[in-house]
Length: 116
View 1 (cartoon, rainbow, N blue to C red):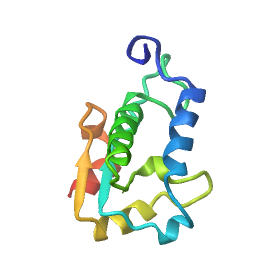
View 2 (tube, rainbow, N blue to C red; view 1 turned 120 degrees about the vertical axis):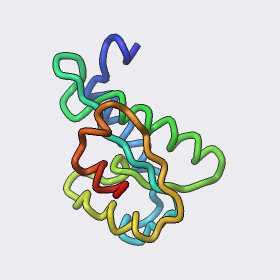
View 3 (cartoon, rainbow, N blue to C red; view 1 turned 30 degrees about the vertical axis):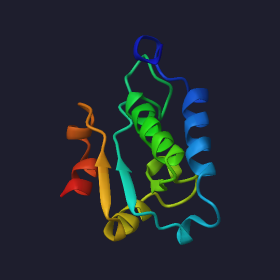
């Protein structure tokens, strides 16, 4: 449904809420070994502001890892008002980075910085 009808703001917020609920305690003390990189992949006229298929794909990976007992971190784990650039600090200490490749990933300055 989301491919043809878009990702609503409500769906995007549920995705963020789920990812943020996986962080037990202060995010500053959360240092998982797996990072998930993605571009939101917002599609004008289809997706809600700040939402897109890339975030949904990343959420599927996060959910799968969590079900397997593996903690990870992505931009979806960062709550409103927090500095999202903390992702880069966590990335430096991570052992694995999973990149969700979408067309938007390869034109995202931030995503390209992460894989550099």
